[in-house]
Length: 440
Image 1 (tube, rainbow, N blue to C red):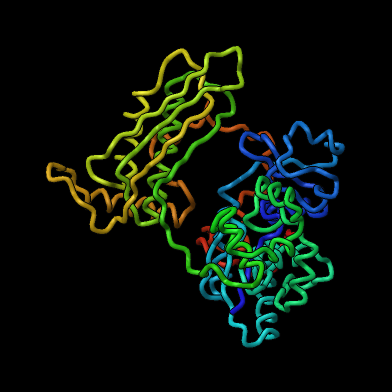
Image 2 (tube, one colour):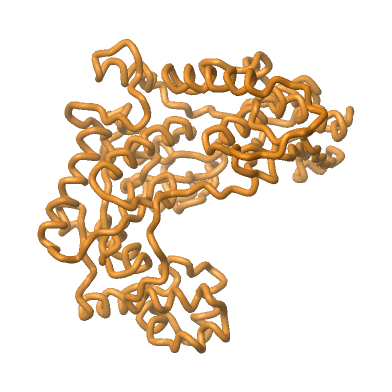
């Protein structure tokens, strides 16, 4: 059995290029919330020396900022394109495990490598044709090695079909000798420093360590990494299952605000997002918490932070109920006279919606509420996210994040409609027919 990793190349930048082909061949960076720092770079931006995580105001220290296109992140767009990519992957392979917004693991039988290679090369072409996102696929006996193989498939220009197999023992040994220990999946900066101080600087040297000794000196997680580098499968690729114990939605505001109404508007939006995620996962929450925080870097302003958590009478995923209790929690922590820079809502004690214990004294008609939420979710799914929302969500004035570099390309919904010849956008996961545009 081989394990594959499909990785979308420079994903956020590639998404922007799908809707604005004029960005092809140019140095492009996507900025984080409030346009703070670089979270995605095109290959051209990497060649200019712009590092990942570089603060936006420091781009000029690495290159002429006029050579770089800076874009504010559009995460709703990126998630939608991610769903479309993963839907195509799921239609061609089995046992897909979505690892992140731009990565997914899957298992492939090892009976015919050449046949599998042709199928995966076709998958790369299908994703690019239907979504416009360039992807790379790496195969290996374990997921840690598949990570390394995927990186090679993305970086090695000699690989023209986007697929790389790292299966032969002699090839694995050569690649591991060339791989710094800090580039191994699961080895963070501090762990890499600990290995380097012991003279372990390559992945091959890490793989040569006795697993039992590694477990005794570090942890079982590091032991599994060593075994995976040796080609042993220490994980099982399974379809994605939701096992969240809590869901949080928060935001750093574009600037400090003092208005209670603005904070309430933000909390309503965050709470509704949490409720919608609960319904998407088929879960309900038993607790709702709200927290607020000032700007700790403003020496000229008094700093204030506080939080409050309330227990719901009956576990629910109803937006109205969760929003009502979130506002009650906010009333317990909001203080006039302070400048707030960030707020958030968290729902916790999450359990499956089936078989919840109802409150004997609860007189609400939950079946009616369920029908209302299903109707709202159905409309939003068919016509676009958040087409139907609670009234306070309609105001996003002071608390909206700073996004001064939003792309001015055609609206994604209009783009989908034009490409599909329909008056409605395509449903999530439905691939677009026709030639690809954009990509790298």
